[in-house]
Length: 412
Ligand code: GLV
Ligand code: MN
Ligand code: MN
Image 1 (cartoon, rainbow, N blue to C red):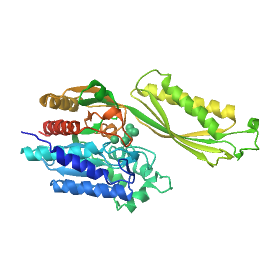
Image 2 (image 1 turned 120 degrees about the horizontal axis):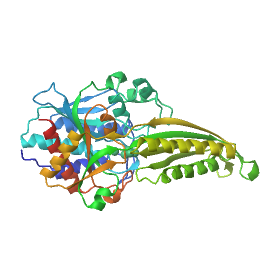
Image 3 (image 1 turned 60 degrees about the vertical axis):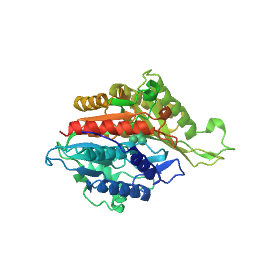
Image 4 (image 1 turned 90 degrees about the horizontal axis):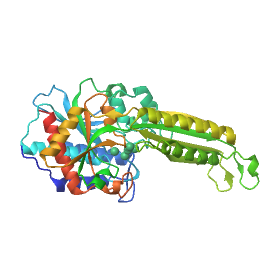
């Protein structure tokens, strides 16, 4: 089998997909189920059909593109990632795993390889938490981690339910049917940019992921008292934003004080009401993201944050409510998939680093229903979730090549 990646075509496709965006280039914004996201998905489907793959979509919009193997009834070998993008993102997050996965399949087809197990490209729906406040919605449903009812009732900022939004997008199937049957996948591999600096620093071109950190998110609402910014004297105030400021620093400290590189905590959303310069903030809503590779340590950080909330509420005479959005367990990549990836790296003379994924991915949930692994390629300065996210053509090509080799191994 002689495998060759069509680098020019793959890079052109990445550029074409980046043009489906609601931001000024080079930024990419592609929020789940917006007209832009739906057009981008339709374009990816047309690419898959052109490659002769059989495409189906489930009720939440997960898109499956299958190359039928010699044993079509046997469990499939899956690969893929997502194409939705957070506001002001780059071109590569998720996209490298989707278009790189498609090119890996095309490279196998060109080589004359015939898989025994079908090989399936999976474009997950709603990986980013932007619209419904919770990440990996598609893979949570596929893996049965989230119930169809809970998923359907999630609301976006405009108060529209996920169920209504997906129906407007023409997805009218039953959300109960999204869960994959047991044994659907023999194995699954996701190609992704590292989203961190370690590969670049080590000057190693590939990463074979050992485990994926466990994310948790909390929504915190602080209610204080508003009033005139001139006439309410300082001792009489219950400023919700000052309470939030204190709590945000406590969140930072809760992670920092663990002194473990894998412990991180972020307040990425902070909405202030009423948001007028001459009005004391009466209400703040924040969303917190807390992650670790160690579940006990991650949960310890959450307890510390809960205590800090109680202290701030008492000290500042405000009310603080927190709502747990998700608290997931870390994933350990399957030894057989890691071995397939490591062997493929060796076969193509590519050095690799065994590493942790500190970002979460749909693989976190697919690992609950199938042996799963991830292959990382470097991204410049470790930048991701920003417009200057960049992966070099040779790294993208190498990633697709090693992925193709691993898919071949897993499907024979
Ligand atoms: C995924 O985008 C993450 O936030 O890790
Ligand atoms: Mn992302
Ligand atoms: Mn991603």
